[in-house]
Amino acid sequence: MNWGTSIAFVYAFFALSMIGAVFASRKHDPGLVQKDYYQLDLDYQAHLDKKQNTAQLLEKPQVRFDSAQNTLVLSFPESLGDISGQVKVYQSKTTKRDFILPLKGEKTLVLPAEKLHYGRWHLDLDWQSQGKAYFLEFTTFVPSDKP
Image (cartoon, rainbow, N blue to C red):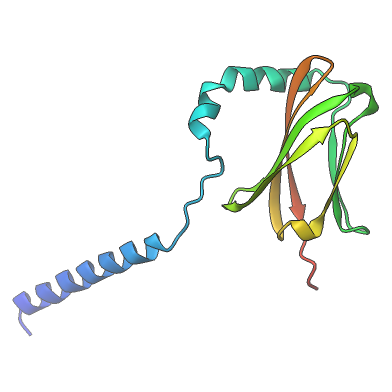
């Protein structure tokens, strides 16, 4: 085997591996965490004001996983008064399982874990109470139901 043949083999191997990498990368779903990231960037000051309003609260909403009932429980303090808004529930690895739950006055929201796939979940609480807008982010982990 001479130098020319060796160089041709190396070049052919490199070209085939690049073609394989292209095909392998096309199978991966790059799913963005937020589909409307451009609009979110434009509205960032309003979002920041909501976060500052939340930071000033004496009692904040709580999220906990109830393993006995196999549910995710979101509870708002009674001091917040009448609540309206939404909770966006999503995983950062895919947008296929994202969903939004409306908030219409209830102080406790119970979400069955069967609706949630195993892994890390993010909850974005965006609500209004007593004429003020609030925003709070939670990250929680839903354990596997398999032993």
